[in-house]
Image (cartoon, rainbow, N blue to C red; front, side, top):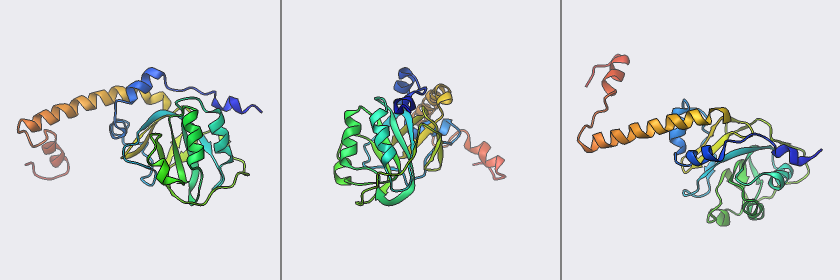
Length: 222
């Protein structure tokens, strides 16, 4: 078996990834039908951290990081490692050493549904890391796992090559096949929100859609 083959999957084009970086995860979630947001337990280690890249998926047994080490060795520059750690917080799946390796490999970030450690160091580093918590206990390295398969992370299905984007609000996943359509819709939403900001500045404080929404809810209009 060649582990390198696990990194051979389709990814969004560099042009699409560059476009995606222009948008907040919240915007992409809204135009994607308010779907794809990971559970709020998965948070950035520092509010300024942002990530955007194709998912390299990893499934591990709770408390064991053997396959995460393999993923670090074979993932391609720009990939975001998305790890199904079963939401386990009894020990950390990685810390400063593995994060240092991820930076050296040019990865785009780490999203781990499990705990991490060395939080004081990782939170001050520029490398974006999102996790479900912190724990000083280290993991074992002896249990099999899986690479580049559909996984469930933070309650969201993630497949290899899906777009993963995160900021202080959390993490959103867009299926690879939908990325271009979602980005087109995001551009329209941003333009509409900019128009609304200008309306508010001009003194139009009631949203045009509000009366219709109130009537549909069986309530009187303003």
